[in-house]
Image (spheres, rainbow, N blue to C red):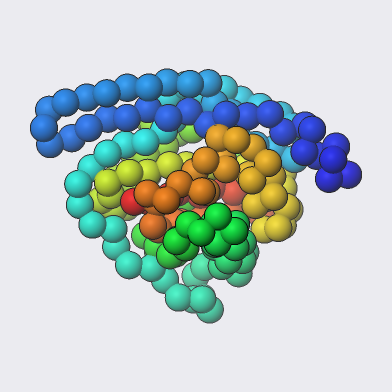
Length: 188
């Protein structure tokens, strides 16, 4: 089953850069897709990095009533993968988790890095008053457990790139059990 599952995963997460402050702007675009257990893909060339120059809010704590246990499991699994390559761990960010939860809910309606209202995924971070130097998003759907979703992301080059990016120091994770939709925001 794992081999079949790994074979069905073919995606690349797009990365575009927008610089703020100095008036300079760079853009890179690659094809991207979101990950599902059945191998379905949906392309989106507009996903990627957005650059700002401010600090990231601090994280929540395990056992918080309003954060699903799966969130903490994913943080632990992501950090185990990063440790294998001597990459510093990410810390859970409560505000980014709230924004990721919004994105996981939205993925039920529109499985895309573009939000149902037509804006880029990173506007969810802005709506949560989150500032950051760099950000990335991973999405997944129809994957039932933290172990399976992290395994799927690690077997996908674009998603793995976000997980293993040493620039990212914080993570937010959203999970919706109805349809098993996942969203990760990485911040640096």
